Length: 296
Ligand SMILES: Nc1nc2c(ncn2[C@@H]2O[C@H](COP(=O)(O)OP(=O)(O)O)[C@@H](O)[C@H]2O)c(=O)[nH]1
Ligand SMILES: [Mg+2]
Image (cartoon, rainbow, N blue to C red):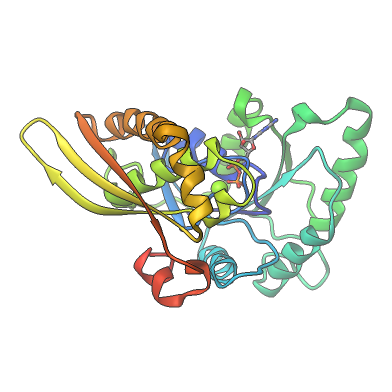
């Protein structure tokens, strides 16, 4: 069991998908992209790695934010290896210290400030860091987390991913397979389909929209050679609904077309996808809505 922890937007879901070899966790440059604990399962002849992708640990302003932090923290317990993902192109900030505090609480970092041997620090986004600053940032993060077990990566280019994999394998215990060889995630397909729709909505919109969007499957019918799926996008305001629908419905059409392609690839069959936009004021503050959306 390999758990990922780190600030939002550092590359945790990108790494999960790379290790698994297909998209099981959605990726965008907006915070709060990952809202569930997602398991990615990577099985080869040599190993089975169960990757626990988590929502990034961040300062919470909404009830949803708090729930996401709890999800992230709860997921770390029981992992064999912990990967701390940082944006290596930036200096550590206050939020990074909060993660160190969490890892101390959970015993991943000892009272002496030294990380346990099964903690790997992954400095990602090295493509964005000038060569002259590499040593400085390396020192800063390595000191902060109390480890010199560090791998510098540029995930979208696959840089040093093979070395990172070897480092992880070296720390995994020997044991029986935990999941069937062909399983890539523990999420139900319904949720993954809704998440792929949400990913397109996040990627195609700006500002407050991404945080305010949730997606939920309202209907799913498997016909002989076609799966019919009805997914609702939930937002908080009429204005956000208008943005999602777009001029003459162009935005919602684009979201639907892009999502359908990926859902068809995952399900390996033809899909008819219908999208619907609903307004639910303040759903992020509403525990009942969070439950309905499966975030709790
Ligand atoms: N430039 C650059 N961008 C990256 C790198 N790794 C991930 N990204 C991008 O960073 C954003 C956040 O990635 P994501 O995996 O969703 O981060 P998460 O919030 O930690 O799960 C996405 O737009 C990724 O494409 C990297 O090494 N370099
Ligand atoms: Mg993520």
